[in-house]
Image (tube, rainbow, N blue to C red):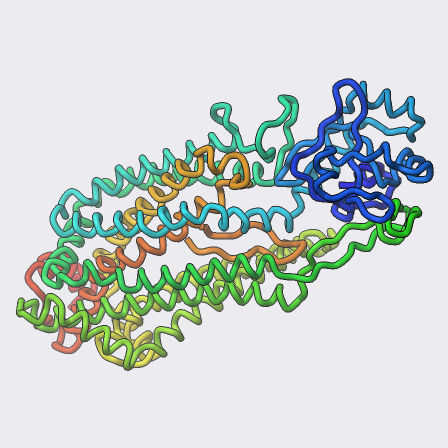
Length: 629
């Protein structure tokens, strides 16, 4: 960047902002000469008769060819040549000055009659603020996704697919030990991922994240917002690790209940063989969708208008074409997002969340239809059950239930984004309110977030049960939701016993898959390829989290922040959710079918398989006792 503007931007009396500085492209960041003074000159044009290749070969220095007027202008730090007095270092592919001048070069500059140059740390502070603006960090995070696509492909696509299939097969053939294995593996993975966050945050070892590309001077240490995000993630993972350990202790005595629940699912999966392989269908559809979605994301963030920055009139530089100092065009250019692009980015992320929920809902409805066919056939094995039930359920879903699934996923998406909008407003209001009513604003914001969170959790639960009743009865979304809610209220004890511990084990299984994907992503991103040179990523945080849930934007443009929920973690969790839905929906569908069966036959289930009756028998007795005579 124009050194004069960099120097001035560090002074409190100046109105020049560093992002507005004019810049030129160099192959390497310039360093001061050991025994003299180097110059970096603007692109050769006008009276300077040099080709671009000659300019590069001369190390961007043609000071000796300048006219007296050009030399005088250069000594005033107005170009076209600028002295290399401060060392510079490649920070995210931009040459940033280090506020430690070369004594030799500075002495030569003073002997030539150059203007006074202040050596102070304000330059470092100004550069630090510029590279850590919210919009700059967001753009680097999006660029990280583009650079680390092989990691996302492996750890967010292939690996969770393999791990999920292995988990399903182990449920099928080794159901008794799976709850214990899941709990142990989960705790081990949480500890491992937490330690990796500690390493990258610099709290363990000597390998913290650095913003400098390639080699740098040993005294260079420029902290970044990415480091702060890693520190926050490390603290969060520490809390998760403690909670995971305490939860494991709490549910240890209830593992046997989970085992009996999983036996019911294992029995169904063993009979309907196609259930294990069916999730590969929505997996492939989602994989294709995400490929196009990530491509569109990169294009959206690279779109915008290239506009000259509106700099202060004090900014002047020598114009080689005009042959004089010009104070009107020394500003640089930057990309500005129009409101339409900002809206398009928001819609793009909303569409991703809705589409993800829709595909998961379609998969859940097909699985529920297959399980319901098994239940209402009295669990009898026939040549139709292993494969044809899945195909028939898929046909019914496509022909009759697509609208209901789309509606359910849309309602959940809208509630999620209302929470997101309220959170954005809350962040903005933090900086504007007066002390008189700030407590009221905080109370309203917190309570609204809490209420929307409860509504969102309830809707997701209702949605899942509604998909099951759609598959069982063929009714529309709202009628199926009402029917499912009524059955749950009437059989709350029975469903609570079967679902609570079973759901905890299944959630731990999903987290095991996503955490293992995140761990592998950390290991892959720790290679030299992603730590230096052109492919260096600014932070492993976003690629790791993408490979392991879904994302949304905290804001767009200057107020944009990092993604919420998570990217190797995110995709891995979504893939695991597709496959684990086989077990999850098996349990829920069997239970709701059982409740519907008892409802239709005056309290005596006629179609329930023996294993299910054994599991629910104790709870049925308890329910009769609580209801009284």
